[in-house]
Amino acid sequence: MAPWSWSLPLTSVFYNTARSFRYSTFRLRSWSRDPSTLSRGAAQLPSPQTCSCSTDSTSQDMTQRLWDVYSHTKRQTQAISPGFVNADTIFSNNETSLHDIEIYGFDYDYTLAFYSKHLHTLIFNIARDILISKHRYPEGLQEYEYIPNFAVRGLHYDVQKALLMKIDAFHYIQLGTVYRGLHPVPDEEVIAMYEGCHVPLEIMSDFYGKSSHGHSMKQFMDIFSLPEMNLLSCVNDFFMRHNIDYEPVHLYKDVKEAIRDVHVKGIMYRAVDADIEKYICYGEQSHAVLKKLSEHGKKMFLITNSPFAFVNRGMSYIVGEDWRDLFDIVIVQADKPSFFNDRRKPFRRVTDKGALLWDRIHKLEKGQIYKQGNLYEFLRLTGWRGSKVLYFGDHIYSDLADLTLRHGWRTGAIIPELRKEIKIMNTQAYAQMSSWLQALTGLIEDMQIHRDPASEAVVAEWIKEREAMRPQTKSFFNAQFGSLFRTYQNPTYFSRRLSRFADIYMASISCLLNYDLKHTFFPRRTPLQHEAPLQHVQRPPGLSVPHPRPQDQSTD
Image 1 (cartoon, rainbow, N blue to C red):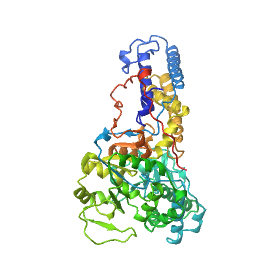
Image 2: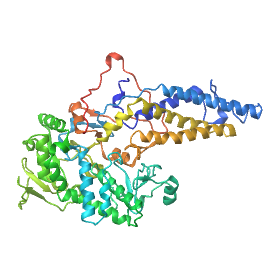
Image 3: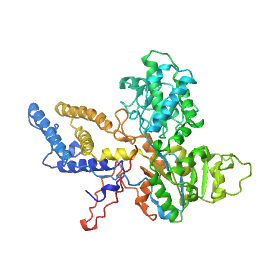
Image 4: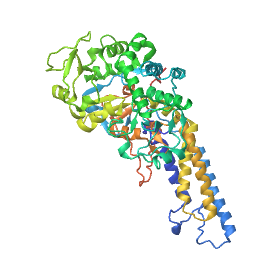
C-alpha cells in the first residue's frame, strides 16, 4: 500500500489511478491524437489515409490492432489493487489549520447525536399515519413500510411532475435515476419531458434547496429527509397502482406538512425520549471529542434547531448530566438557516423547565440556555468572528453555506454516508470495474480519430460495453440512485455544494480524535483536465508512518 493512499480525497482516488494508467498506456503506444503526426511505438496503428495495403487487409489489421490494445489495457486494469482509503480520515476542500481555531461550534442532530436506522422508520410511520388521519389519504397506505435502501441524500424532486432524480454538478439529470413512485422512468420519457437532460437554472431548487419563488425542484439535503423521499415515493406509487388521479403539488405539500408535524409537534422527540437507547448511538465518541477540546482550552458552543428538552435528554445520555459545563454558549430552536441571515429575532433565555423569560439579553453566559436569536447579535455579544471559529453540521445549506459565504467562519461537514461508500471503494471488485471503466473511456476517446468503418465498428462495441458498465458501477452504492458523490464521471450536485461550503468533511465528529489540535488539513492537488496527472512520490519504507486506524464505528 502506498503510504499516501490513506489520505487522498474520496473523489480522486480511482480517478487518479485510472487517469495515470490511461496516460501511461497512451505513452506506451506513442499514440498521437493528431492522425497526421503518428509517432513511433510497438502498438502504433496504421493510418487508413496512408496505408498502401488492400482495403480488406487494412481493415483486418486495424481491427486486430485495436482489439490487441483493448486486451492489453484490460489485463493491466485487472491487476490493479484498490487504494485503501481510511474512513476515519478528515478530508479537506480548503486548507485548514486547527492551530488557528480557538472556538468550536456544533449542530446537534447528526453532528453530536447520531441516530440508528430505527428513527427513519419511526418518522415514516408517523407521517404516513398523519396523512391518513389528518389529510384523509386512503387507508391503503398502511401497507407501505419504510424502505431503508431506496433513496440517498442530495436527490432532487420535481414537485410539478412528481419525479425523484439525481442531478449532477452541471444541472444534468443522470438517466436511469429518475423515479416516479417506486419505479424508474424510461430514459426516452425523461428526455421528452425535459427536452433533453439539462435542468434550467430557473426551475432548479433555490439557494437552500427549497422549491419556492417559481422553483419547481426541491433538493433533499439532510439525513432527516430520507423518510420524506420514501413517503413521497410510496404515496405516488399507491395512486398510480390504483389509477387515482391526483395533483402532485398537493401531494408534495401534504407530505411536507406531515413530516414537519412529526418534528414541530414533538411527536418524534417524545418517542426518542421514551426509548433513547434504541434511537441514539455514537455517544462515547462525541463525548471524547468534547472532552479533548475542553482539556485544550477551546471555547465551545451549540446552535441547534431542536428544543432544549430534547437536546438535554440526548446530551445527558451521550455526555452526562453535566454536559452544559463543556459549552460556553447553548442556543436551541435557532431556526437555521434564518438564524444566520435574519437580524430581527432577539435571543430569549430559557429556564431548565423550559419557561421563556422576557428580560433583554446583554450577554451570552455559560450555563444558560438561549432560544432563537440571530448570528449578527451572536457576533456582537461574543466577538467570535472569522477563521478562528470552526462550526460543524450535517446540512450543507442550513448549517454551513451562510457561515462560509457571509461570515468567514471555517466549516466542517458531517457526512455519515462516507463510511459505507469508502468501504465499497476499498473492495477489489469496485477498484477493478472503476479502473477498467476509466481506461475503456480513454481508449474510446483516443481511438475515435480512426474513421474507417472497421475501426468505427470496434469503437462502437466499446461504447456499448461502457454504457452497460456504468449502471453496474452505480449499483455498487445504491441500486436506484448510485453514489451520493458521483453521477457516473461527474460530481453530483450535492458534491458541488459540499466542496464549496465545507472546508473539511468527515464521516463523524469522532474523526477529530485522530489528529492533534495543531494539525493542518491540505486539499490534494488533483489535476485539472488540461493538466498531466501528478506522479506520487513514494516514501522510503523507513520513513513511512502509518495513519492511525481507530476502531470502526457503525450505526445499528
